Length: 460
Image 1 (tube, helix red, strand yellow):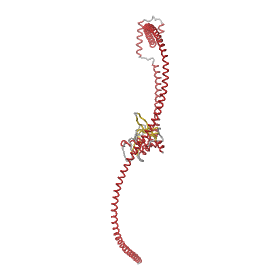
Image 2: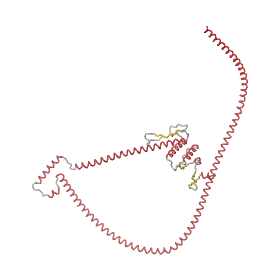
Image 3: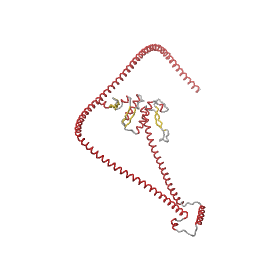
Image 4: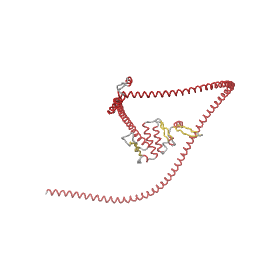
């Protein structure tokens, strides 16, 4: 019962809650009905306002269209006026350049006129001095005429003495030729006697050689001295035929023994000494070869180290200069084709400006190739700056924007070196400190220097 009483109580509470919710829902429904009515009325008012705004928008759009047409017309008139102004400005600069050129030519003509005037005064003074010297020379010439006649007479007398001396000389020369002929004849006789004496000497030397050979043969084969043998008297115990037969038998026995080299020991000692000398020379060559290989390895190692240091520095400089000439973030690099042999390896140049993907550097435009070459040139220049640098028309393939970049980098490096640029580009000419113009007047080349720093100082 208690449980049922509790459940009844719970249900009663729930019923009261539901009644309260139903009452609140009815109130909210009434409120929502009122709100819907108000929103309907506001919607009617908003629709009227929207229609009025739409009509105003259409009117404003027509006004804006008319204003845009008027603005387009004004813009076209402005562009025409700007083009006319630019044309007039270009013409003004041309006239200004012509005026400057005429002023420079006038100044040059005045300098030439002043120089010519000075030279004319100097030539007049020289002419006067030359005239005075000419008068003095004429006076000296008149005084020298009489002396010349006396000298001519003395010359004729001396010529007579010379002719007599020549006659005596030719007579003496004939006697000398005669004596020379006699000397040549006696020389021929002497040569014949010398030839006969030489033939006798040759025969005597030949006999001596035969005797010496016989002496050595007796000593080697029979151990007999020829001098002792000549001193001995012939023995009567042996007959000549018996001795000859004994000699033949002895020679046969010796031939059976085979050939014997009595100089084998001396030849062995000589060959041994030569072998030791050659072995020593060979060892010296081996040591020298090893020393040379070690030196080459050391030189190659040092050269490789220095090359890699220089290559890394040039690589970093190339990236910096390339990005200053193009844009920050552009890809560029220098790589070795064969890193294992850097001294003999080729070098690849990677250059990829922003917005391009070239497979090789040959696919770049002419201006981009020139800027890449300038970047490589200045990267090498930064490794070892030179006091002078001459650039011959390197800005020819560049447009105005790239010419500005080129002149800026030249200006940055001008505090380290002096640059001499050969160019026909007006933008490059306008950014230099001093310009030298080469002109030809009267078929003569002349140089006209203009210092912009001096002109700016004068204008200031």
